[in-house]
Amino acid sequence: MICISGKASRSFHPIIGVVAKSHRPLFARKNTIFVTDKLDKSSIGYKACISSGRKGYFFHPDHIYNCKDIEILHDGDIVRIDATGCVSVLWEVKSHQNAFMITEACNCKCIMCPQPPRQHSPQLFQEAQYTLSLLKNKYIKQICITGGEPTLLGNNFIEFLHRCINEHPTANIDILTNGKNFSDREFTRNVAQVATNNVCFCVSLHSDIDTLHDNIVGANGSFSKTSIGLYNLAEYGCKIEIRHVINKYNYHRLINFAEHIYNYFPFCIHYAFMGMELYGNAASNKEEVDISPLDYSDELSDAILYLKRRGLPISIYNIPLCLCKKEVREFARQSISSWKNLYAKECDNCDLKKDCAGFFSTSVSLPINHIKPIKGAL
Image (cartoon, rainbow, N blue to C red):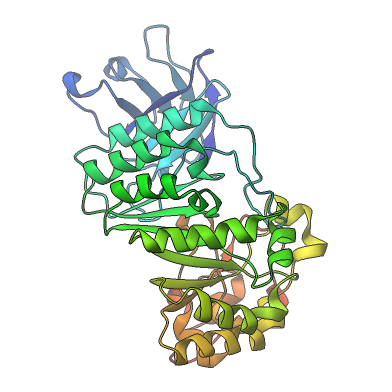
């Protein structure tokens, strides 16, 4: 998420509110965080304030002052401020790539995970619930529910999904999951009773070989549970996308994996082959997992074209166009969240920059030496 920082006016509990960059009537300030260059008497009545100027007075609401880069905040953004002086954007009003992270706990320890698991914090789920409340009656095009592993929250996960569907019935909802908990038929049935046609379960599967998948995710038995989970979701009529993160462990088996999903999981609505974000565990294990997309471009091309010939809907996520073979560039998507999307200086000379995924700004290293700006059409 986007974070900016300043200094806190005093010690206070975290505050969540909707950004306003112009004044609101007194009756409309209850859940509003006012963003201004200078705090004055007109700043009274807001839930909190964020200012690029000096510290306010005792009669001002709790606030962050001397805050840099406040221009990146927009009217309607939902932010959290805390006593460390941090301003975190929980919901970016101009983005269609927002996500609710409802837990950092996970039942896997993926070697390339950019968000290493932590003990579950009830506060994180409560903040997601409150953020959802602030979005009520707003037009929302896309919602993502993620973690950690969101299904670990059990009934709380189901209730949160139900709220998202009821309060935003036209929104497309993606659930990022390793699918293991869907090996429980009763749980899957309960989720399916809530899910509508707008909900897609994006399930991670990283190999066609059970032991290799289990080594990548750091938990024995995961391949079996995820596979059963996929079948249970399909049996109850849920929409499914399979996501495959390419790394040094599995890149050489991309065509085998393509054959596997065609033979065993042809019922999914979409399949995604994904480049890595070298952050978190992936950064810590860089020597073990990192491989440039250029080094597996042949294998990726073979897998994509195999699935294309069989009529399956397929995409490439998080890989720049110039690092894909020309024959599969049409499948590469602009998939990286706007707040962490980066283009190298060399990309300025590329005719296809606006259609390219670019890079993760969070990655500890980028294959800069492999970038070759493209001239002409896709």
